[in-house]
Amino acid sequence: MNPAREENPTLLDGFRDGYSVHLDKFDGPLDLLLHLIRKNEVDICDIPIADITRQYLDYIKLMKVLNLDVAGDFLLMASTLLHIKSRMLLPPDDEEESEEEEGDPRAELVRRLLEYQQYKEAGMVIGARALLGREVFTRACPDPALSAARTEEGPLEVSLFELVDAFRALLARIPKESFHDVAPGDSLNIADCINEILSLLQDRDTLQFDELIKDELTSERVIVTFLALLELCRLKLIRIFQNGEYGAIWFIPAVAPEQAGSAGEAVQSPV
Amino acid sequence: MSLPAIIESIIFAADAALSLDRLCEMLPEYERGDIKTALTELAEFHEGRGGGFGLVEVAGGWQFRTHPVLQEYVVRHIKAKTAKFSQSALETLAIIAYRQPLTRAEVEHLRGVDCGGVLKSLLEKKLVKILGKKDIPGRPLIYGTSKEFLEVFGLKDLKSLPTLREIQALDETPQFERQEELPLEPDQAPPVDSSLLFDDPE
Image (cartoon, rainbow over all chains, first blue to last red):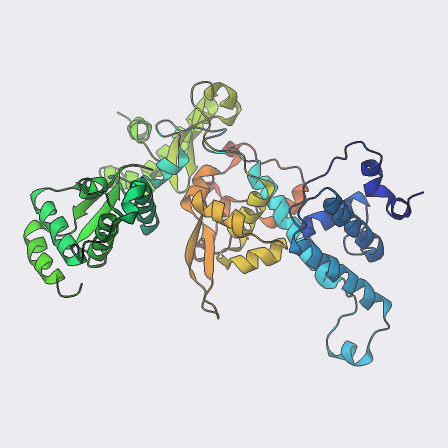
C-alpha cells in the first residue's frame, strides 16, 4: 500500500488509479480554501484547521504532480494555515493575550474568507448579466468599445498610449537593413521637424501620422517626427484625433492658423 | 407629433446612448419633467409590447437594446464581439466595482492572489480605469470602473449593482439576468440621499 495514498485518500486516489480527475481550476488560495470548506461541509467560522490544511497541501501536491505551476500565493497560504495550527496547539501566551489577540487565531483568516466569498459571489452575479456585444446588441454600433468611446459627436481623442502604439507599429514597418545605416550627422533635429509639421498644418487643416514619414521611412525620421509631435502636444499647438479604434491618427492645429505661425517661431527656443 | 414619438426617433437614430441632459438640451421647447416622463412611458411601452428590443437606461444614457433571450438569433447576423469573462476577471471587477477607488495591492489582498495580469486585461478592455495615485508611500495607482463597464454590463449606474447584502441573501443563485428588472426610472427607486450618489455602492 502506498503510504502517500493512505494519507490523502480524497484527492490523489483517482489520479493514482489512472483515470482522469476532474481538477477544478482555483483562482487562488482563498478560492481553494472555500472549495474545501464547502466540500467538507464545515462551518466557515469553525474551520477544522488540521483537516483543511491537510487537504490543502494535498491539492498543492496534486498540482505539482500534474506539473501545474504552484503560485507563491498558494504556498503563502499553506504557511499561514500551518502557522494558525501551531498557534492553536500552543498554550496562549499570557503577555501576548493581554495585549492584543482576541483568542481565536483563525479569526483573521475567517474574515478574509468571508470577504472573499462575498466578492466571488458578486462576480458571479455580475457575470450572469447579459453582456453588451454578446447577449445584448445595440442598433448602430455592436462593438461596445467603439460605441463607448464615441462621445456626443466628432472623432475620438487619442491617448498617449495609442500614439505610442502607432509609433511602435511604424517602427516595426521600417525595413530591417536601414537599421545599419550610418547616421549622416545631425541632419534632422526636432525643431526643424516641428516647423515642418506646423508649416504643413498651415496649408491644411488635418494631417495624418503616416503622411509625415511616408517619404522617408527610417527609424531616425520616425523617432524625430514622433518627438516633434510630442513636443507640439506639450506646447498645446496641435490636437490628436483618431477616426475610430485602430483607425488612422490625425492631427489638427489647436490654435488658429495665424497664431500657429507666430507660435511656431517661438518653438525653436525651448527645443 | 407627441413627445414620446420625438424622443423615440432621436434615440433610434443616435449611434450611442443619449443622456437625459442631452435630450433636454436638444429639446429646449419641452420641460425636463415631461421628457423624463416620456422616457419612462417609452420604456414601459416597449417592455409591454413584448418585442425584440427595448429602451433601457445604461451608464446614464438611454438606448435601444435587443432582448438578451434573442441572442442566438441576433448572432446569426452579427458576430458577438464580447467574450465571456473568466472567474478571476469577474472577481476582480466586482472588487473594483464595490470598493473603488482602490489600489492593486488592495485588490490582491482581497483575492489573495496576484492580479497584475487580470488588471492589465481589464484596463485594455477599458472596463477599469486609472483614477489617479494614492497619497501613500510609493504613490500606487488607484483604480475604478469606467463608463464602459456600466455599458457592457447594462447597468444604469453603480448604485444599480445589487448590494453585497442582497448578493449574500441570494446565495449562489444569481437572478439578475434580465436587465428589465432594473428600475428604469430614477424616481421609482427608493429615495436616496443625493450626496451619496457617487459613493461606494455598498
